[in-house]
Length: 112
Image 1 (tube, helix red, strand yellow):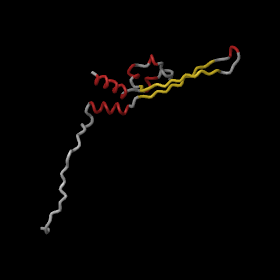
Image 2 (cartoon, helix red, strand yellow):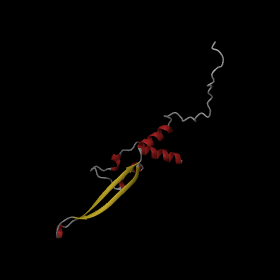
Image 3 (spheres, helix red, strand yellow):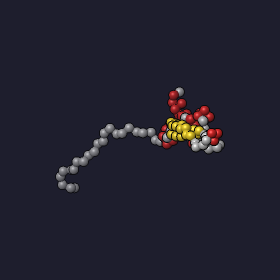
Image 4 (cartoon, helix red, strand yellow):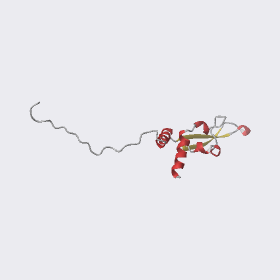
């Protein structure tokens, strides 16, 4: 069962699109709205919120919160290689030969 879950996660990463993390207005989706399959492709998030005061007096003074979001995705190449090996697209790795016999002796005597 564990292998099946791993395979499912690898499929999600291999066939994912970064577009699944953004909404129709090209803004990053809130974490609660990211589809589960797209969420599996995310290796890490980095969010930094900064509050700034805009210049203004009285009713015109405005506070603005800025979010800086960084997203690191899982490597697709490793996921596709894993899946390719699993379905047999690559030849199995053979163990290295343990010994090789090589005869480098020079025959003695006169050439015949």
